[in-house]
Length: 351
Image 1 (cartoon, one colour):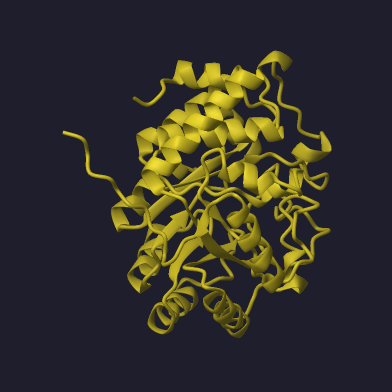
Image 2 (image 1 turned 90 degrees about the vertical axis):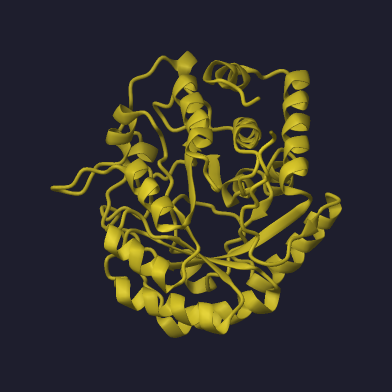
């Protein structure tokens, strides 16, 4: 039986070694039973750092005038795709800021060519785009779409993620539209956002289960000093005892609880975990419920410019070095690299 909001909150508040060990073991057992020992590698390609939004936590915000902007060409994208195929990755994840310079027809053409010329599944993470554009990309062959709702607390969301002028943001509505279009749907939250309470985070995790998400990405909030939230210019008022910490352990607790409420979902051990623990962050995430890693294949000249937060892990590692390193780390866990697209496998319901 999946945990209730109250039970999730209780787990989030626990800090004892025995309680943590029990949670890690339970999450790892559920992972093994439902998605097996394969670790699926998705080639992450950050095709643009341009964004029309002004999110208070994100270094890609349009208000960050310090950041040099880029947008990859089709030729650059396909050069990276050939390497993704050669590495044996089953999926390309094309990610960008909410960049309307990426025209819907242009991207649809790239998606069609990927599907016609490679064995790769296509995952998109392009922000809040109009329904017709999402439909066009799905018809072109896109398989999955990632759109994190960041927090289900409406007041906190409005403070950190202002809507574009004349528009009302409703990411849950867009996620439902994506499901209706036939995408595998992914979402997630940041852990330890200033103003995030244990109760609101528990609601987030419970919502993952109610939405029956196919993919869930969670990671610790890492402050960016070039943003209102990271610089301290924006300070949500909250009882310090209720503030969720943005710690490594809390990130693992959320991954583990997410596995319990979404047993079949694909859950990545994120770059943010590797950033706060460069020695074993990804491995610990994989041993506490995760089953996906997204190695970065963005060209090095662009990778440093995709700065949602500073100090990101593996900024200067070539894609080839990263592939070899991950293979060794995954084998050391007694796990193996998955083959094929690694789509969600739905288990038959128990009668």
